[in-house]
Image (cartoon, rainbow, N blue to C red; front, side, top):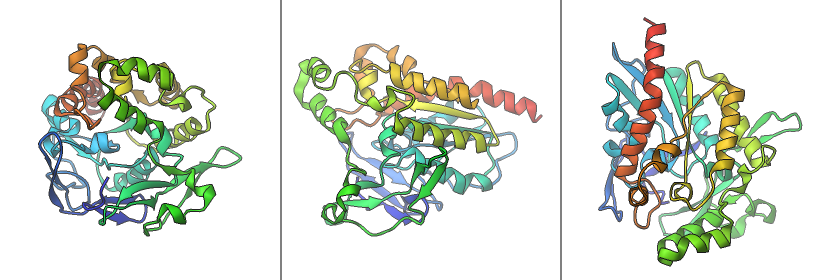
Length: 336
């Protein structure tokens, strides 16, 4: 990911340059990024008070939610407004970020923005990102560098402890990092290899992947006691407990699960356990996506880029709308 449209932020590492407007080259024909004064992708400003008679949903997530590959209006967040009358959605998605950073964004923005519902969109790959202390970026010279990110750790009492805030702003060469910190750089792991294999190996890729990766691109979900899952669960549980409105947790699947390459049962079990323990609403869109015929499921991602296509965003919007519309109606009745 390039930094050219982003600006440093001391709490959650970066956001979009306020007011930036840029055309991003892409295999889908290019897409327009426009950010508001708060530094988030939106064609409108985020205002404190919602309009009379309207409900407001705040959405948090990474590049799948921010909309890499599509213009603002084609994202599932924007499309939700076309499926649910009198709804406005504020999208706080930031590419290249983890659920830990999304929680910090929430703590920064939610107290001053009226809202009726929160959607936490957790790309399931985020289980790797929350244990990272650094992420790789491409700087203005085209060099891959590490940038520090905020991160949480669990202490001996399983309490969350925040580190790296304020976030160190300096670019770091990988050669500069101490050996013990290099294992905390999020470089994509085995998933980057899987993506390249899917793109280039052709029709026989499924059996190759099953053999090479054991149908399990994210083994940290296998056990409820895995350290990475315990950390992700703790972040989500605190976030849910602090929210003053209903929270809907939406685990966004990797294409491995949608295209029947990998078994999703482990991550689905973990999020089900989280919802039961925390009282959050869980909406798992995988069932709706798996109901599509195989050729349409493949059309949910681009030819080379694994991010959701406009077709995928439409399917996600339909799936999420069916889940949140009754919740919003209930909220409206309670406050009538």
